[in-house]
Length: 468
Image 1 (tube, rainbow, N blue to C red):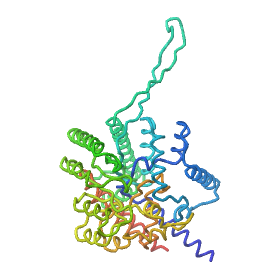
Image 2 (image 1 turned 90 degrees about the vertical axis):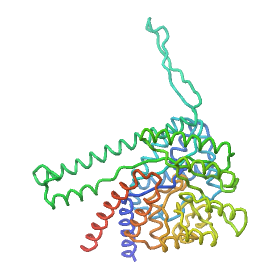
Image 3 (image 1 turned 45 degrees about the horizontal axis):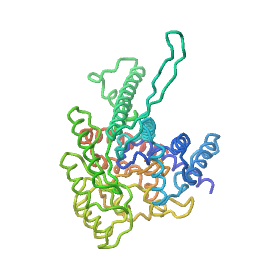
Image 4 (image 1 turned 60 degrees about the vertical axis):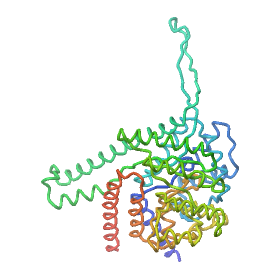
């Protein structure tokens, strides 16, 4: 029995290592929902915000778990991977979402969470991410240094000036961080490739020349290049909250169009699309349809949340979902509770779906009890089995990695275990999801880079299996 448990753990470790190294695509990630739990608690303390008791409890549990791992009590945490250790239903999620804006109140906090999210996904092996967020008016804090009687050696003092930043500044702040991050990543990647070349030179004792090197040298260089982690490419989707007014939606879409066209002309495209999300029980897509049609005509891609709450044939939610499908957005978010007639429509004329396994499992209480099995919960997903079997166009995503205590490696690990998918099938899902990215300018590069890396990983995996 001990041997079987050891083998299972070793298999989990090997699969987890493969998935983490796999270059991944994240297409459905809400900025606020990706906030680190530690950061949320810290910002709340600084701003005298009282968070829900469940958040504090989860935070303390996470700290204890990290302490155990630091002390070496747990080498590979299968509990954190496969069990619902932090259960949150749909109402719990929106309760947390209400507190996050109370903590992220200024541009300084915004810069922190954007940088942290990009760092987290980069370390998880994500090579392309489309973060989504609704523009907000945050505080702008600036320190000014004054001096008293400086001519006679008097001491100076600092004064804090607090003003309100515009929604445009909010978006431009995110774009600035993304641009800086992408430049750093590109430099890091080029430096790593240079180190690979230097390593090959050292091994051969000669100068590597790609034009005159032997076939064996080129093959070795190609292998070294594939080992290097690909650079992260971050992009931005502007959100519209369906709980808001049409006027608020128009304001966000107008800003998205303005910055999209402005950046297009300067060859610095970061805004790639717009989306409708938020509380699915509020308002109806119909009142926002003209707004999103205008965004589409301006060249922006469109994603719409759909099928997040139960529906019956010809009820209000069914009719709304039908309107969304007939609108033909570029992607659909979740599509979890769509009825069979609606799924039949999509199977005949597919729209790519952004699937968020842990989020869907928790919000619909598929893993009902505390520390319930997420794998069993994901098996209860109404459509995912069929999507995988039919090779329906889907992407695997996190939705809100901070709220659901997850990352893309964990999401793919859960899907692999729930539906018995091997490394080859997982690689195919990732590669096919490249077709759904909103930035056409990087699509070909992503496809080529990811295919090269996955082929190399599969070759190394097969060699390892043959040696056993």
